[in-house]
Image (cartoon, rainbow, N blue to C red; front, side, top):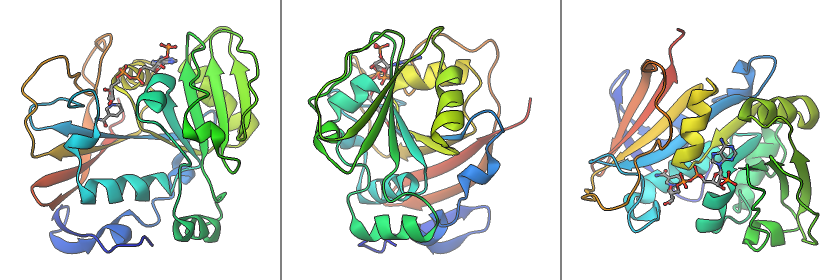
Length: 253
Ligand SMILES: NC(=O)c1ccc[n+]([C@@H]2O[C@H](COP(=O)([O-])OP(=O)(O)OC[C@H]3O[C@@H](n4cnc5c(N)ncnc54)[C@H](OP(=O)(O)O)[C@@H]3O)[C@@H](O)[C@H]2O)c1
């Protein structure tokens, strides 16, 4: 699936030339979900010096293959989870724009569009982004405080959670919205919180052949340190144009 064929070199586990769409096909993330929440895969790009953005945006670190893998991963999830401020900054719109990809989702038994899950403790929801203006999109916002409804074209559900936690949000997504797989697209604060609550199953990390050099650009995690390092297993490593596409899974404790 996809409009373009993106060829990559698979370095691990078994070296071979691969097409991105074949490599990402049939991940069946939802089949590996624990009973109480969806399976959570996180997707980030980092510079070679470990930063998650340049001039406040992640796009300058990416490239065509990175974008393709990003969309292929999105296309496999029941829902896409993102911090409300990141959705605003990156001007989120309809999550799967390509009709071929939506048709492929339906063939795989998924809804044509993934559900957008926005999280915010403060209740600052960016109702002005294109996502909310799209009548085919469905958005669920988990907030720690009550947020008044807003007239927008998208189907919107606002879930105030008391007490607030990401575990509670994911429990609700699973139990009430039937979400079995989530791809989290950031940002760094949200990733730290997810890790802190033990909610990350896999990490898709693009290591970009770019140096950012410092400044205020965050690393891919921002927040409290974990009580001990989380151990990951490397599932695969792909390469294209000097970009490394690494897929890790969290090893059992
Ligand atoms: N390299 C990448 O792949 C990548 C991906 C995404 C973003 N980024 C970059 O990261 C930067 C943004 O960093 P950031 O750390 O501010 O983004 P972030 O993780 O999205 O955190 C800010 C947003 O997420 C919400 N949030 C965070 N943790 C939460 C939690 N535990 N529960 C509920 N809501 C939570 C915040 O809401 P409240 O403040 O209301 O609580 C706020 O809306 C941007 O420059 C962006 O370009 C990079």
